[in-house]
Image (cartoon, rainbow, N blue to C red; front, side, top):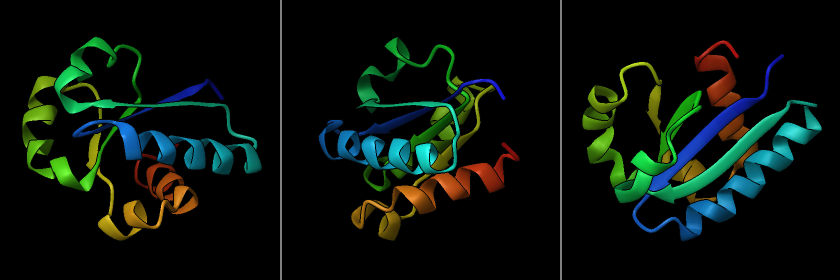
Length: 102
């Protein structure tokens, strides 16, 4: 399996940066090779290259449709508010794997 690149976008990137660690931890338990980083949605253009899945924080869910149009070859999804709030990296990773057959 090739390395999977999951990019997270939110307002500032701070809380979402913490969440990336949880997702990476969950991936290690499953022996998945992933790269996961978080950025401000405003700066996402600079970091989108190579992304397999773009996840948006709940606070920027209003940007989902514009991101889908902007990056048509990349699946875009919004992280569930409960999973985001509880920093449930395991559930978020499971959702990505199931939804996109990865």
